[in-house]
Length: 390
Image (cartoon, rainbow, N blue to C red; front, side, top):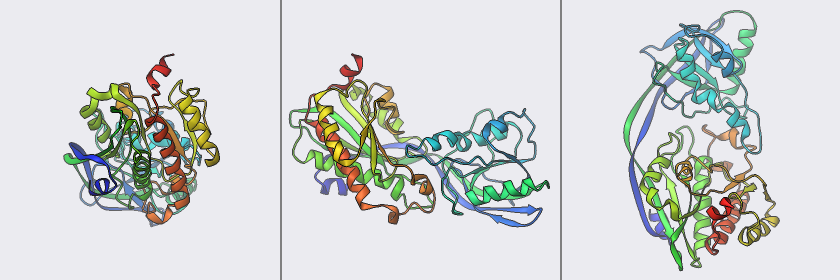
């Protein structure tokens, strides 16, 4: 709040809500046989704790979650299930989407088949021994089991051990606790419009991050980019209001729902919504709201992008981000300004998510792209809903 106020934003306030919280404790994992070997793991968000002293069992290794799901209920009784599918490096982050359910759905699927614990190869493109955490989903029709992410080299190690033909036994100890209702806040500030102040552009990033790193990449960069862009675009007093929202609980999916609940009555006045949540850039592609490409305002924006080496896709924008998905579902248009994610998943959700990984030139390019879009829309009369309906 103090920073937004110092930057000149008006109507700076917090919107409190209750969120789910998960607190990490001590964590250990090791191979017991055929030869002792420590493993590097991070418990997944919402994971259950192991019994006191940990859990021990033979592993059942799978190359994909589909392979695990092909087994019938009870087939993994007493086993520690391991999914070791690698993630593909891509510029647009599609490689992450292809394996995301290994982490989010894998523990419940293993539990339905009797597994006592679940390990997943980190959803990462790096080759360090740093594991990458993230949230899992508990299921109402499956017991809660301890679940953790393995570092990439350790997942590869288990593959080689299994290939030798001998049973592999692990011991896993995870200690954590869940808090069903913890206090959280979305932080809001505005650059008021001079002519149409009730017509609002919503933009922002999320303040929360996973605990191993400092959150510089996910999502300090998004917070910085959108805050700077909103300040630059709003300083001259554009026709419409630019609202910056710094969401407080994205990683466990609570802040977007809270924001939508608080603002559902004004969705019809939200001109467009957008979130920056894939690192510092540089931005390489823009996906505009459906039907808007040929509007004079968007033609002006596209022209501004040319020297910044950004291409405009013929595909329209999709949901736009976890924190705006709910208001988009209620009818708010969205835009996607896609950063280069080639290296993002080397760092994402790990101890390597630190400030030294930010390139100021990439950050500056991203701010310029975002500021160009915000100013173009805020100073125009473009109606994305009407264009989408044509």
